[in-house]
Length: 148
Image (tube, rainbow, N blue to C red; front, side, top):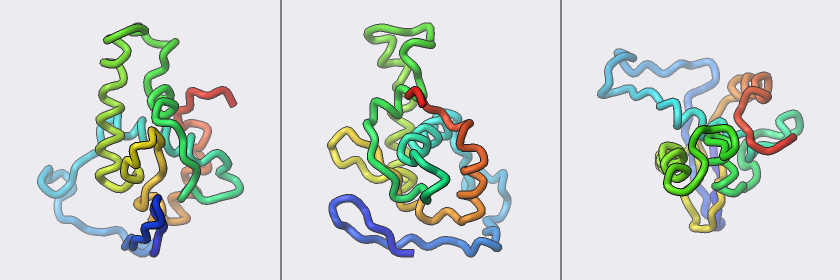
């Protein structure tokens, strides 16, 4: 599947057919299979919710660009936690900042363009319609700090 990336760059994403499950050997083998951390899953969920404002009308990719700080706020709300000010707030969001870097490196989010925005990456473009339908059904469970 061909995808457009920011800056007019074009790329190709290869994926398994929707009715095929890839076999990678032993799923529990840590050398061939790594599970996402809770902070990575939460960050991806927040980015997906914010970049994909209308799941009934569109596919998630390419979505819209959103402020990185909005994604972080959806993961670590400033008003709901015990840590609220100064260095404590930075520490509270650091796991999610690291998750943003990891998700960008893995292609779930587009590479950092240096503009403070988060965009969905080419791996999201490779999701099957079955996966997207499942996300539509659970859209209301994705984290979002903005009032809707």
